[in-house]
Length: 303
Image (cartoon, rainbow, N blue to C red; front, side):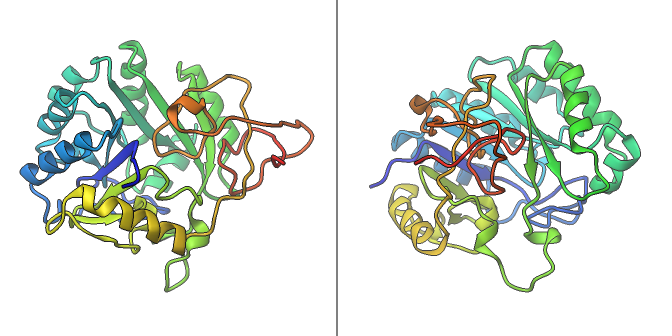
């Protein structure tokens, strides 16, 4: 059985926002699917039993799931690290109480320093609330990483990155939009939009119980945790990813700030966390669009 270092648990498809680029088409009409809180606790236990290091809880918007505080506490009790990937529009008080745990971290996306532009992308007046919660996380010294999603030419992604740094966010970068879900104009899924690292030590469970290589490759279903244990599905989902998803470009780079390893993100980091460090960097050459590192950093292909 292949080892997994990261379980991505997509606990809901519900979200307050309706972002124009959402790859899983989540929104106010989304649901928690067929997975109950007990189902998620069972999957978390199974993940810990096979040596999973990080459980990343995602959505939709996971903060809207009524069982989120209990699921976080359960995962922490299993001894794993927990990251909540949230839009940060709303953070329940019980979740705030958990965020200072030494194995907790938060991730979010950011779009613009201009509130009107930011709100246009999210489809709701979210800029002020997200900014306030980012400041609150920074003030509490909660580990926070933020990705600026570069969606269209009208958007000033570099300015958004500068604003995050002014807010005190030290772990931030720019990523490209994936043309999946609401961001696509095609009728069939496109595996070329995936990073190429799907299924490599990473397994995702969707609200339906389906097991896939990653949330963006949600049509590549290897089985269901409703009928199989997570352990029994690790090899099938890994094999499916290798067969269906184009391999990564092999381009790696190291940003000058020596970042930590970020679960489920296409960024360079130390080998001890399962990421690939830089072999060669060349400031004169820009990163390729699908390289496994931050797009705002320059690099060249490794030999």
